[in-house]
Every structure is written in C-alpha cells, then in structure tokens.
Length: 378
Image 1 (cartoon, rainbow, N blue to C red):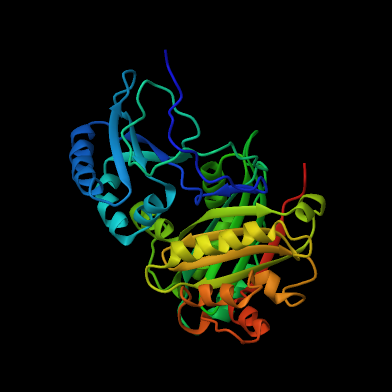
Image 2: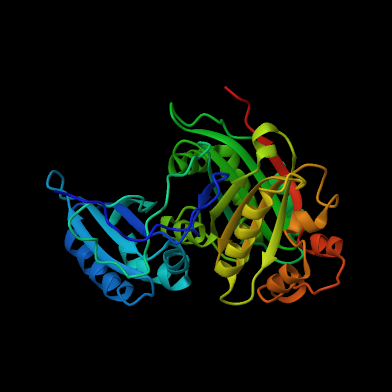
C-alpha cells in the first residue's frame, strides 16, 4: 500500500502569489536532450564531467540519466534539489555556463523544465535532505509565463540603443494554436537593458518565434556593435552563450485583489543592484514585502514580478497613480526596520538609510521606459 510522505509541509503562501521559488519546497529539474547522431558517447563523457561537479554543489540531492528505449538519440536528465534558490544560483552562474559548453557540440536541442514537488507517495520518502519540504498547495496561476533578458551596452551609446530598441515593428503575436505573445516591456537603467516578455503557452516556442522575425533580427544586428559582450548571431554557440547569460528568470509574481479587478495600471520597472552574493536574498526580501503588501488595500501596486540573476534584481510593477504617489508602499518600506533590512543587501548608490527621502530612492531605482507593447486580444 502506498502512503503519502510525511515530510513537513512547506510554508503556506498567499493565494495571490501565482509564482514563487521561495516557499522552501523541493525542486525537480527535468532536462530533455536530443543528441546528434553518433555523438552519444561524446555526450555521455561530457555529462559524466558535469555530474561529478554538480554532486558537490550545495542544495543538490540526486541525479539520474536516462536514455529512451524507443529513440537512442533522446535522453532525459532529472535532478532533485533541496529547494529552487540553490539550483537557480548554480544554473545561472558563470561556472555553469563554462561547464555545459562541451555539451553544445553534441546536442541538437535541449529543453529544461523545473517543478516544485507537491505530493509524494511510496513506503519511504525519497532520499532528500531532512530540511526539504513539499509545496503545501498547488498555485492558482493566470496562464501567463513571465521572463526577461538583460544585457549592457557600451557607455555613451545609451541614446542610440534606446532609439533602435524603440523603433521596430512588433512581431506577429500568434506563435501557434496554443502559444501567443501577450506583452513586451523594455526599460533601461544607465547602460543596462531589461526586456520583459509575457507569453501565454510555450515560452521556448515564443522565444524561437520572435528570434525568427526579420524585424527583430534587424534590431539585434543593429545593436550588436554597441554591446559590451560580443556576440555573433550567425554562430549558434556564440548566440547561445549570450542569451544564456542574458536570461533573467522571474522568481516571484503577486497580484493584489485590486489587480484582479483592475486590468490597467502604469507599468514601471525598478532596478535593485545587490551586494556580491546577496541577489537571491534581496529578491526573497522583496518577494516577502510584495506578499505582505498584497494584503494592504491602500497599496498602489496592482501586480509585481521579481526577476533575479546573480546580483541583478528587477521588479516589474503595474501601479495605480504612479511611482511617486506613495513611494513607501511602492518600495515596500513602511517602517525603519524594513529600510534597514534593505540597506544590508543593496550595493553602492542603490543603498538606502533610515531618514532618507524615499522619493529619491525611487528615482535611483527607476528604469527608463523604452517601449511597452501589448498584443491585441484574440
């Protein structure tokens, strides 16, 4: 007789949070790999090197490599992690980028899927760390996948790049019968560019669809000379490494009761540079503030999405009344203790102190809007 595992449940989170990596539950990662013909042994050797390294990464629990019984070119890699943050810290690191490069020459395609463990059956719990937990309850999503890309351009080219990025024809929103582009919002903070996209359906299919559009390719080619990181879009390996480093995943999304009722709101983005090694902690702190603010009927924030990679943390906000109407609630800093908590994690000019004008803090974090395009509803 199978029984449900008796691991302690994860922290209960608000139903207003439709996406989060911060509830402490275990993570299952699934990587689907299509290996080039004749390259199975090369792939296996590259995997063995990667596997021996990942076994020592904090938060990693177990790993499996499987080969299809129907098509030997199809492989499946599954891994289990204590929770999502340690996996994301590793998979988004420069070390990981270097480690997976040997795999690029022997695979046609890969697809990575990440899942929180909600339920588990069996006579014994899976071999995981004692602190690992299950997701307490399924999340109620809104059918939208949120993702972002970020990169820097050479100082002095910001105005030229902003004009290039603003002046292009929007791609066809329909990708296929199940996937559609919903919205693209583009911002700059100094020489840093952030492009946030919202997709209904398959994110990977949408990204590939966009990349194939001639007008998008023309924009990418036009900004190439201005990028701080060199890339060659005609070289698959160069393009893959660039977009891997540019990936800025969404780690938390919350919609308030007002946001559920109101479709509109001014779209803004705030940039929070974290101190070295503190990006994930900063993102989690902001997520906790957003979750608490969702219970506040006076909050001007209708929706908030937090994106994080390394020390880069960005909040994409839909705000009623603008950023300056209530800066304390927009920033989630409604008392001195919260200001102090944030100060310990922010780097350089972004750091704040008790007694400062929070409007000045908003001005420092505010990203310049370049374009915000919403696809027409079908």
